[in-house]
Length: 292
Image 1 (spheres, rainbow, N blue to C red):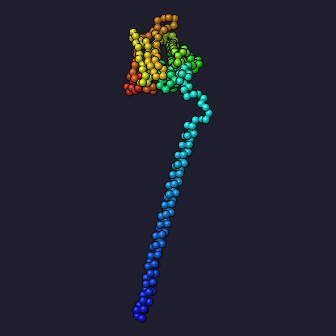
Image 2 (spheres, rainbow, N blue to C red):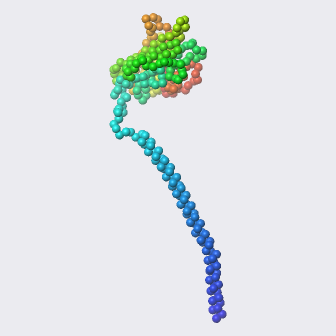
Image 3 (cartoon, rainbow, N blue to C red):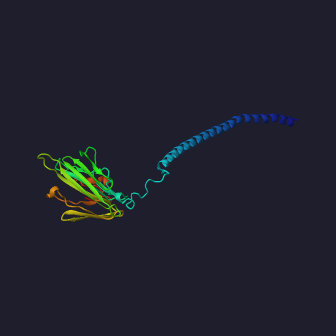
């Protein structure tokens, strides 16, 4: 009986200890489950935030891509002109033209590697220091009025340029023939507008030819004067420019001082004017050639 009593007495003790352990461990276990739940909620919220950010960026990128695609998508209608409409084989009469905006006078071929020609001039002694070289049309350069008197857009044109006491007239005409628009000719006339006893200005005219370094330009000088400029381009083939001696109205002796030839690599069209101005900083050559 004593043993049975001890067992009966021990049973409640074991139950009490079990209840006590459950009481001590219950809240801890419940707190652990609550912390896991809160961590899961935070993870879900972070995932939703990241997903929203990704979707927002993707939407912006897709919208930008759609706009760019619309901007560069060709219209479904047939092209107004064929892809090679500017080639000399399709439109030889348009291969050469005054396709040189921003310069007072010049011509070029309508091709990816064009052959360019142009005109510069300067009045000597009119102002102290370096003469002003006229080449590109600049706001406030004092030149004007100027503009085409007539131009048919294809084969001929005449332009007048007023530069202080000088009046320049530039003319060109094309003669059709061959596969590259035929031949063309320039004429540049300079007329002084001085009044009374004013001294006539001394004028320097610069005619230049420019091509890239892959092509060929060869000046031909005779008796101290540039007679021809020969060359070759992949699109034009062999060509030759002929420079005639100056003339005067009434067959009077033309008044000129000297001829000069300048042949060099060219740093690029934007720096072409600086090459002809004395005293300018040295410019680095590139793959272009120029004869002036």
